Image 1 (cartoon, one colour):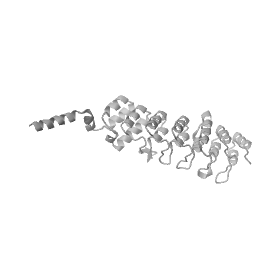
Image 2: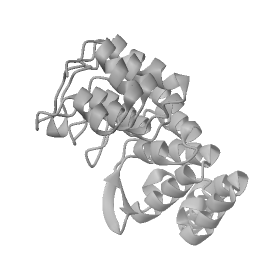
Image 3: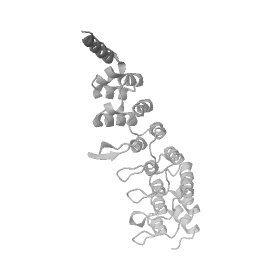
Length: 265
């Protein structure tokens, strides 16, 4: 009798443990998802009390991480990371009807207001040089014109000289995505060159950052690239020089800048 009493007492103590009781409860991802969407941080934290990342299945973990990042809910994202969710773990998400792999940091960079969530991920150990699907966080930020976020990535170890899976340098992405009217664009170009980006590197079809800047009629960026010793006589794989491109597009101001830098007709 004493033996059974002891076992019953031990079982009662075990079941009364808050941690064990919480782990025994099934996770309702629909409820958690609604909390994330509504930004109910306290409710979300309470619902996952006693849980760890091991208690979340892959689909549920991806759902909650994606919603927290897309919604800009940095506090909720921080809760998930404290539970042990990997800040560098690849996630499968749907994009244009296809399933693609992304890192949490890539997702934060692509989000409309992702600077705060990116900061949370980096603080938790996200690698600013880890990419997926030919994308790199720095290059993606530059292509989207998110220069403050690009600066944060550089401040935390992003390697400016890396080339992405499509053959584009960080300078090329800047030339493709940045707002020429923003003075920070020229400043970023100078920073990238100083950090080791080859200003005259050739990408797909032999295009350089200068060619992309000319094609986008970005005169201020053209000035910055020429000041950084971009070749005014560079040509693509078809032999068309950047000056010929400017003349074909009737960009008179840019053509004058190129000629002043030594471009030959």
